[in-house]
Length: 455
Image 1 (cartoon, one colour):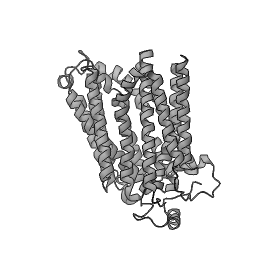
Image 2: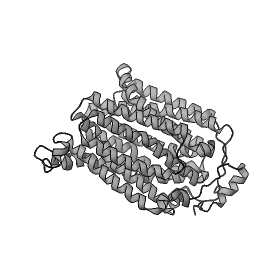
Image 3: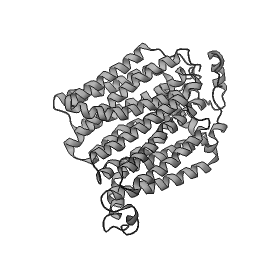
């Protein structure tokens, strides 16, 4: 697939529209989270919303990827944004009429997650249509930067807006951002791409299964996604507990400083990748990120120090865009454009499948296993407790250290697996660095040894 001359300009317009929409969605997520917690006072209810917001998107990801490959990706993004906006309008109507219930929030989260499952592969795969191969890294940096911007801007802005315009006003702002993103998509045009399977009569379900087949038949790619699933599991087990750990010895202001350091780190990492791109050996970035994550997790459990925690979170988040961008560019270079929706959805599904499990396990592990061990008279109070302390929050600190060590062992084990370590050499790029004319490239893609039919 050869990007058109105006492809980068089109990508930048779409990227900006999606970034504004992401900020609006994050505003509503923050506002609804506050509403639920104030209404129920239940951390469990709050955590279940997080599960509802991610699980449906994981389950339907392969089907959504097949849709993104079969139909116009711009139109898929428009329909997805429209469905998400419609669910926001329903919440607004219920709120205005004082009929909003907790189960409505769950349902809204499910609808939004499902819409995102279609929007994400269409958006990610469209980058290969719009952007020349030499600019994949910068595009990935911009996408990561948009996510970082939503994480930095939305909480602070929502905290201010909720006092002035209330939850009703925040939802109205979110709806306006949806309209902006859809308007951009209605104006721009994506260059057509050649689908090597456009003449086949396979069903959408067969195509959905093909994303998994493509990944399973490549040991290095499968190992890479299993490694990401492992990292997501260990990180999600502890990151959900950052707030109670910090508030056990500090104030909300201290927590805000740590969150801000995280956002700044992610923004700087995204900016660096957008300017300089990713290294040539991208798989080494993945291994390096695993080692750094293990170190920062151990660091976060070591002492009750806001400065130490802020530094550790900054270090962890500054590498996050680089590793995610490196993985994205690696896949864009190895997977044919007309198959990227299915393959990206399958890889995303596997890599994120462990997150809901971690959300469900983190609270019970902290409350019933780790916290009792580091209570004043707990089983580890006179051993480990002499090093990292005892009392409220130190059980969570021990979780950070334990799962940091688990992450270290897992990363070293992954490095020993040759198919994953050599993935960049063993899987050929689907297009050369200087793309040929569209008609020549269509023939090349069809002959790539890894471009199997979905039969």
